[in-house]
Image (cartoon, rainbow, N blue to C red; front, side, top):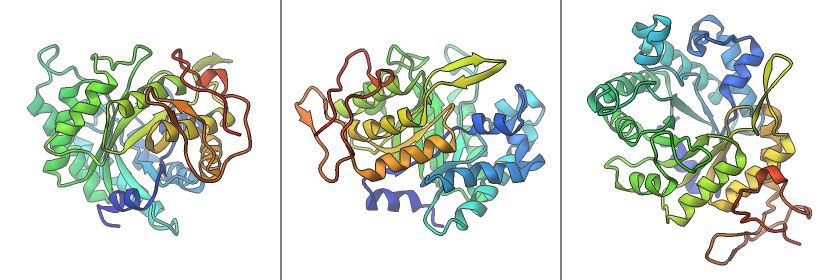
Length: 338
């Protein structure tokens, strides 16, 4: 598939659905804390195929490769810094295999997570060093057949810029998301408005930008609203966690139900998101509910500070009110339409 597959889908659709949680799914398959998920690309390729196929079968138009921690700095923690090319290439190759069998256009997005190091001047990582690590990973994902690079969970603007430069050097289209906390900022203090301004000024702008992970669906929706009110012109990405993590009987469990994530998906779309998916805790069951809700065409009414915003088209069955977990402190949401 051409490297412009995502751009084509974006031009043809009002919204696209991304995948869910990589880590949650792999832990359910037997990955243990402290293991490097990227090693499974070589050690358990059938499990990685199952990870990808699960998202495709649940209706995802885009799925991310198992390469989040695939930079040399992250793999060094497992004495695998010399295997960046191998592990990232195979992650993308397995994805290409699944996508090409889907019977429809499915985008393979090469996941590129943060380096795990703090950028200068607060930390030791230089801009040039970050570019070099991201570029090495990007070239391997490209070689393996990724359609687009997907930079995610970034906190620092300098690291985001370095990833953008790496994508440019690799001659690859890219998307990039940051992770925001309950205060509406990344760990390094970036706000949604600041990020919207950043992406518009990059010499190599992404095909899509937005937020992933963070705290929960409601806080992520607040961030998406921030992108919208900032006047962002680049398609917005929303990949929220399936609720809040809780420690239950020796395991981490996310309390977001499929029904809650279905409501989140519709709200995310109506807040301005074009690419909608899940992050931590989001399983194939959640994804199916999200897809069904988006395809029904229903909408929530909301206020953006500019008057009432309403989607046209078919309506979902009447719902009394979004679940409390999805209502931010600003309480911007009102009753569903009749």
